[in-house]
Length: 79
Image 1: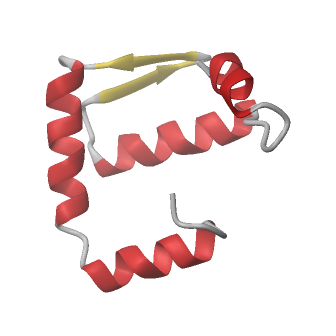
Image 2: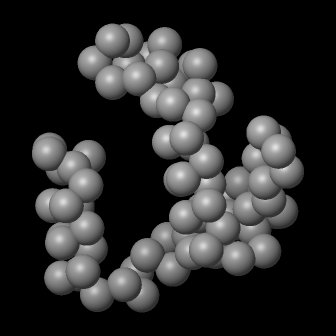
């Protein structure tokens, strides 16, 4: 996954193994029981559509002010 993303992004921003581990760990916290991580293998515990549905619902529960602060803190440009 990381190699494909790096290929798509070119040299603008390279995604490291630590970046991916941080994101996966965050997802495991946000939607417990739907993401697994064993060594370097990431797994979905359910259909991708269901995982995305649960993730969207979890994000919707976060107040919009907090979402904006997060985006401002971690992204120079809004994704």
